[in-house]
Picture 1 (cartoon, rainbow, N blue to C red):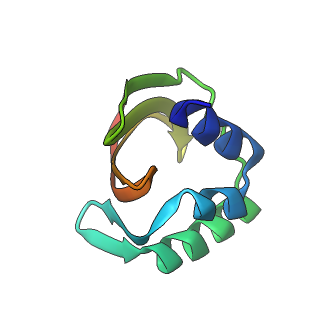
Picture 2 (picture 1 turned 120 degrees about the vertical axis):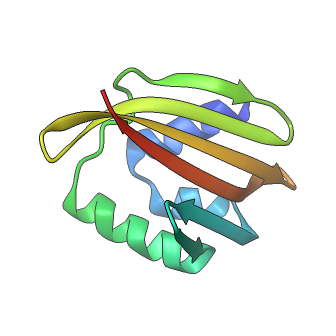
Amino acid sequence: MSFSIKVFQILDAHDVDGMESICHDDFIFVDEYEMMTRDDWITGLRKLWAETHVDFTRDRNVLVDQRDIFSMQFTRDIDGVAHRITNVSLLKDGKFWRSQIHRVPV
């Protein structure tokens, strides 16, 4: 199974345990000027997905799905404004290792 299919199955199901399973032990997430460890990011994700339904299918696009890098985009409304969300992740041992997110109003 390709990595993108695995990621989309996890995102579409809001499966936090599944997401944790594809994050490397040394995972780091960068959001603007904030960096989070795997545990901190998973805790935040668990809270977000419990409180908010995020539709990862809207305008979803895989930018790259290679052995060492994965990138995708989708559109999400944030405070009533559509934003293009771009995620770029380096992979290590077949798992997310370093990830960064970028949000742009569209």
